[in-house]
Image (cartoon, rainbow, N blue to C red; front, top):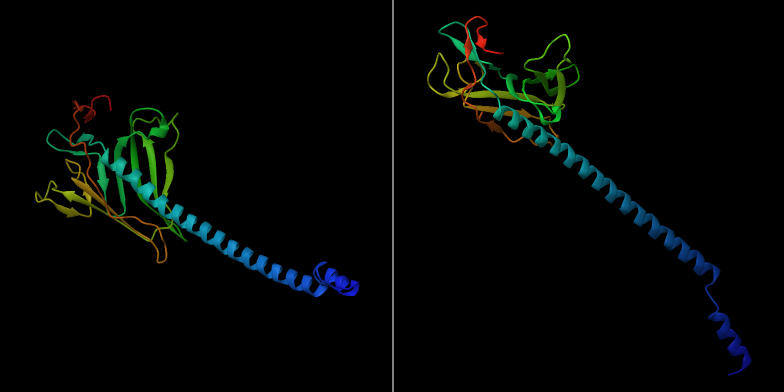
Length: 227
């Protein structure tokens, strides 16, 4: 092989031409852009999915709290006169008020009065819960605490199962006011706006305490002694 041929071969193996480098850089840029777009879309999808999951889970957490509070509702008996009385529990289709154990976050015993209701405003409707110590002193105790349970709901329906003072047959009712006993069951249905991914399976709760066993009637105050 002569020197000219050898020189041509060495020159060909020395590297890429300028055109080849430009083509390679262009292809690499296209690949990087495509890869970045795919990663960006995947990240947005993941974030969107995580947001929806957290959004849906928040309603289930609120449902768990409502289940525990109603299950532990206390049937404090209030004497109207010597022959009549009622438990401290009132409910209609859009609100319910009852006594229950103090939340764990409070860090102290005693009972609290809970009021769960739809808080209607101009632009939205929220399901909220207020709590206040049963034996609070209005002069040195804080005002009731308001907690958002589920925000921006479409509707709520509360109903109560049991026999009333007037009707001894047990059935579902849309009111439970001034009855001698707690309802056997409380049902909470919650509706969301179209497209809302949150879940609220129909919740049916059975109050587990059936009688105010600690009540010693005081005819003067017409309440249990010490209350």
